[in-house]
Image 1 (cartoon, rainbow, N blue to C red):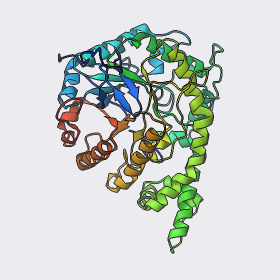
Image 2 (cartoon, rainbow, N blue to C red):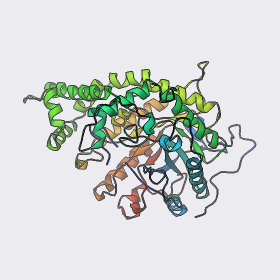
Image 3 (cartoon, one colour):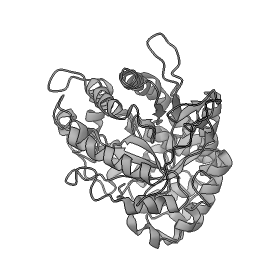
Image 4 (cartoon, rainbow, N blue to C red):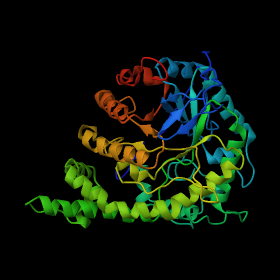
Length: 446
């Protein structure tokens, strides 16, 4: 299960038969023609130079025992295409790529390449997503055990494992070491290893037209600063309640205690139904997360982007903002530049859109006003920085029959924003879900 409060988090599988190639015939008279998907302002261009939007679904096997791929057949991929989708976001894992420092697993990459080939045969583009939840295989998925430097700190037992970001000292310490590029056991920096893992992937797929590009890190998040972000948000709520209500209001300390119980969380989310309260919370937490973006997240993205560009100058680099942006916090990420300060021409913005109640028993409190705020802020960033926007994740309703209507409404919000999007997530039993009809499109590329 993911935890969507204080923030939000999952798993899935996949599988397909043969359909015409997704690659259009090239036009020698088109000045934008390329052998790969490209970027032009806020639009994606297909290999023939025509504008294209991507509508698809996430495929994510988080099982180390199954080699992070499992039993993925062509039949499921064909089914995805039959729903009118034209793309998948395929999870890959650092632990699968580099099980030991500096030793890269070609067999794992062969399996990923085989999945890309199968997707291509079924008319699907592929976005490769370096996935992580709580940073490491020790706590969730992502980094190898050798890259997890937790200083021997304790791990807190929590009912919703995503809460570990806020209370588990080992998770926080491991994240802080990654953001500091601390030395791995072989003496090289953790981020340097991560960049080399991405370079290993990019070298393999640099000429593959079915690959849209590289999502550099799924839902990055700070270490110890996560706790201060949570406190700041609740302080903002307390101040807003004091301003807008005449009745006694809880202090920050009381809200922290409430947040630890189901009944308390439900009351807090009820207060968050007021957009004035919600905006106050976002304003209070924003400086902490924006400072993380500038001082930690962007330097990592620059390092990884430059490593990829040493072997692949053409595929699109996707910037996934920190996880608080899922809630509506305005991001402070910026375009990737080369060593001379020149902006990379092939990059896109890939936020996620989740209301605070997703993955909780409080779906009845879902707010479309909150979702609209999140999407509008992401769309503003896309236009201000002239990047195409692809929502890498939304949904996470897991066959809940009560979510069919919400799925339909959220898809309309995303369509009105004019962005590409990937639903979370595929599983074979999705065909049994009443919300599936809301995901279907008349045909691929629509």
